[in-house]
Amino acid sequence: MASANALEDFRSTSRKSLAYGLGVDSTALLLAILNDPVRFGIAEDFSDFSVITALTGFEFPDTIAAVQEHVLPLLRARRIRHVQVARAGHLEEAGVQVLSDTRQPWKQFRRGRWTLMDELEANGTVPQYSGGHKCAQKFKAFAIESFQQSEAEGETVGKLFGYNADEHKRAVKANKHQAQRDAKTGHAAFALDFPLIRLGWDRKTVQGYVKEQLGVDIAKSYCPVCPFSGVCSPQPDHLKRLRKYPDLAARVLRLEYVSMALNENSSLYKDDTLFRRVTDDQNTEALGQFGARLDEEDWAVYRVQRAYTAGRRPTCRQEHGDRCDQPACRDSSIKGTVFRSVKTVRTGTRAEAGTFLRNAALALGRPVEHSTSAHGLGIDRVRTRMRPDGKTYGAVEDFYAIAPAGVHDKARKSFTTVWNQMSGERKPHLTPSEGS
Image 1 (cartoon, rainbow, N blue to C red):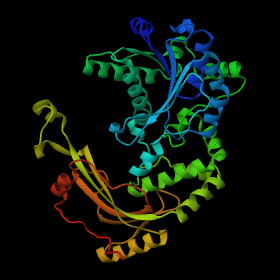
Image 2: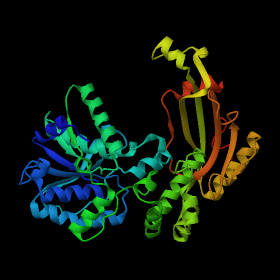
Image 3: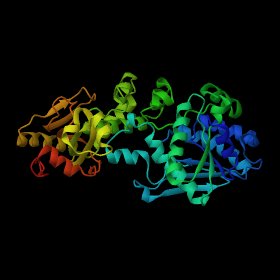
Image 4: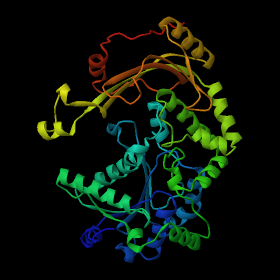
């Protein structure tokens, strides 16, 4: 919850906005503001207030439809400024795309030029559970803050978040992140406020208020690919939504398949796969569309290399500070930095990719592994190097796997140097022609 000083800082700003996430929590806060703006430190005529939405590009369609039908008319009636922005490209240098900036909003956009799924499919990975809400930081916070700072001309902007009273940790994290940024820049770019937490409105209260005000239920807004979907929405509700939109489920299943082909431990959920949950839910339509996608798409043979550096002993940090290159200070039981490289060796049909992998296995003198434990449909790999027990650091792994094409060639900075040092290898195992 915001301190008295933080709340006063927010109220003193001349520009105030709601980071509108399209879901039930931020909708409840928006409705409360529309009913009594002064209560929230906003001018009665809304002259100092705007609503801004950053689009990940992968929302459930019913979320978009509900906002367009029930929320936009309220904004038009009060002539409240409504801004819709999206990340314009993979790199921050691409900037932000403004899809709409109006006081008469008629359309709730679904996506911008570059979406979260574009990013995930290009990287060949699902969102990382251990990474927290990095997706939100990259596709929401970056777009909103970049747009607002470009307008603010150095002025502090007041920003409202619709975190409910069950999400106190998110507010603490947001305040901490903002304080770190302010300390780094020497300027308070944003003054944050979390009214639902101050009011003690939990999820049940929020849902009841929205139903009372609009006469309809508004679902929680989250991406179908979110690894926290069991938190964002009860798992039965999430599975029900996937049955309603089997095409979205099939796309996420495809992403999970590719992700697990490149890293067998990289399922959508921390200790489970989406494939298992959808199968247990008997969502045959989603599974059918997923299988059809695998059969119809181009496939690739990927070479995946990882160098798992050993981490520094705690005593090393105490004795040698932030940097130390002494091998004696490394502990193979402690995880250091993981350097990954992914390269496409060959593309073609699914059958052609499978034939190439089998021929490559013969050329390399290695077996083809068909793993069904990681994913129900099975994933084929040929390993040329393995970590001794899958847990030791200061080791490398190298393998070929087949999966749907589309993952961009990518290597972490300094990968080549680290790989050569740890593996002693300077040439690739296989060229595109050797598996023919």
